[in-house]
Length: 389
View (cartoon, rainbow, N blue to C red):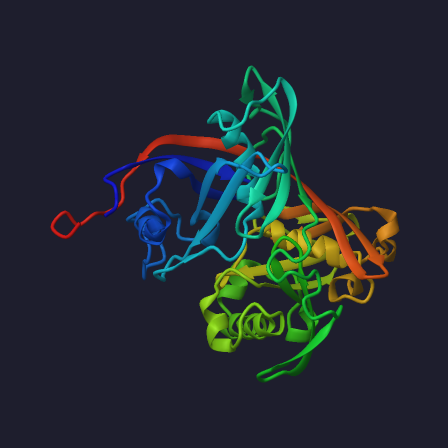
């Protein structure tokens, strides 16, 4: 039986929003799916989630559950849930980098960790990927600093910066940075034939293809892609085949039931383009252009974990991503140079430390700057049938 009401906090983290919960306030875990679907308003055939707290797009249909950690290397245990919009399903197979930026401020505001004045580092254990994330941000008068001058693509206004360091992000989904052991692989795709892809797993599993290989320019806007269902179907076929090749699923049928990973994206060389708000993007100020699809929807901005995979793959000569870089120096891990990615909402910069060792490629760390903001706190009400509780 679901409770009548549950304490919750609604937060923005990066370019996503989520309902945030204390683990102690939730019922037993077997009830989570039913609870989260009810609270977010899913499944909704109209794709609007008007009967819940969701926003009708994947970046606004998320939940996070937090509690103090018993691990010696972490302060907080954090579980992420991606609530499907038109399906009766909650996916826990991957993490959300954007919502990860809200975890540290939540933990401080809610008293889960003891903060000090000035810069704090909150150590987060993501239970989905079994990886550690360090969240670094300023605390003043005992509260996370919100006011600041950092503007991130896709979010209007400015807020205080939060640096996220994903430690040893390789193999978060599959156990290996390169799940097949190869920088590139070939997939056989209906209507196209053989196509080269890079399958990489850093914070989340991703598969990338060059835009030109699937008949695209590379700078298409999300609404353009939504008007071309044959392209979305093709990218879905790439995603499903990659899922099997990466060992995430045993077959295509099973792959179709795993909605969040792998993400699928396409990349192209840097050039002058524009954002969805019609602001120009100078091709000389970016290293490549990228687009991503998750849960069947083209993203208005890049998911943070997709960006991390791009940043890591860009440092690996021979990968699909490295092949399209404008500045070939950024292909070598020795430069330490951040990668500037042109995306629908602007430019995202990602830093990655990558080495080619005798044991193979290793990703030591990936770093981003995000912002987060507490929007609302109170109670959320699941829809409970009182006649059949």
